[in-house]
Image (cartoon, rainbow, N blue to C red):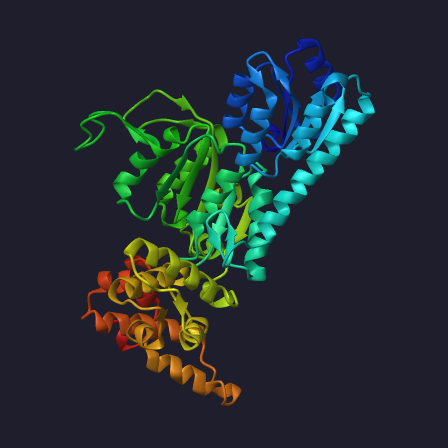
Length: 458
């Protein structure tokens, strides 16, 4: 938990004064680091951005005012408190104009230092919170997410809290909702942000290779192992290991993963030499993990070991106006990449974006907007451009049913099945191509068809 605390950086060339300031702040909920020179301070800032900086302007290798500018440029929320002598108050005033939070004139009372630092830490915390909860631009959200719906605001808050912990995070949500984006956000917000983020999809590898992908192997361990290979667990040392589609993992490998979670020790396939690694686990699945436990496909003890901090990502159809907001964001981005003139959607096109059920969630929306941007051009994306991709007739029927009775409301599962089956038909039975157009994995199509009854699921 230590790394999750905010950092207070003391930039003071007098060792005795730096020690006094550090001792004064010993009981605060913060990490305290000292730097005696400008170059040392820059190294700390680059490796671990501070929340509060106590900055002496006169340093052996330069002017502290230069560091002030660099810190405020990198992180406008960072609070810089200038420490100055009586003869340099004018310099301190200039520093305030340059973005410093406050200044302390030597000698100052212990309580004055404590109060100033505590207030600065609280303002920094609130500034970060406001930035998280207040979307910028046209619907920008948080750390790779886009959206302003209340359900996503709750996700942002949970991610921020989870990042401050070292506990394992278990992310659930349908395919395409952004589970890997969520995992990366947790990593970037954590004390391990300077370390590696290693992601591995447990459902993307054959059963006999996934163990090697996670733990590594030695040369000759199996046919085709022509050289030693580091596994994902070793590559994620001092960082974050993200195990996507964790419920697809073989039961035998689940046993080994549980042992790794308990001991922090990995052993390459074909090796008898254990290796200690330090990783933070984040895992995800698009299935109901408890249903997998009840069905005997997922170990109950592993589930409870992993399911410490749960985060559920809502499907796009439950996120209010976010489909429109994300669509606008993607259109601007793709238009710039493709050199197109698009400035936005027509009102009719945005209404269709908002009403469509999006079975493939954000990934499907991304593919749809990319498709339109590549194949068309103009000032606005009209409904005639969306029609061939989203089945305009279905959209109109949905609008007409809104005027009918509740008996005409169709379950979302039926709409999802209809969208998938229609995509397969339009792709001449090629389920891989249908999955790509829908923005979901082909495995999802096979699994859903197997669960459906009737001739179309045969």
